Length: 235
Ligand code: XBP
Ligand code: MG
Image (cartoon, rainbow, N blue to C red):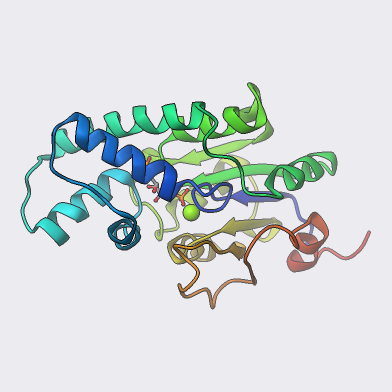
């Protein structure tokens, strides 16, 4: 099979956005609303079991506080404040891409391999991360950016990857996904996409048995490796 598209996950894959980005933005939003909530690293690591910021705040209420302090509209409003803070963090240049991501994107473009994104995060977050790190027109590098609430069920459900494949008009067999988490891996594999994992501090102990390969960073990941995984013979 020919490698026609690389589908990138965002948070934890393209960039280490969780600890110093999303988590900080959530705490800034809680402070702005004078909520006595504070997510330290240890708690956030547990809360990452749930994808989606709004879903994660609901999980915190029901699973940890054991009471619904905020209703769904208040959660939505609080999430919008969090997104505002997160984008400010990105625009300040505080969240770089992981080493090797920019090179992989450049080489893939040179080899006319289509690029796409499948992420649970909010679309404007993707735009801000790409612009801060790859320039004003960065979004145009990606044929499809499938993000956040565009699908009803977030990762580990396969919806976001099915959505991306549909928009790409490509078969799963011609694509490879790069993920960082068990939820993301499950999502891509359920959509029939061969997936490699690049781990990070939050995800390194998760179950990656369904991954084609597991890497701790992008140093060994190049287009030839991805073509070999897909089964594209040397041309
Ligand atoms: C990671 C997520 C996101 C972020 C928070 O997404 O689960 O929810 O943690 O972003 P992925 P939002 O690994 O799929 O890129 O608050 O915008 O949801
Ligand atoms: Mg991720």
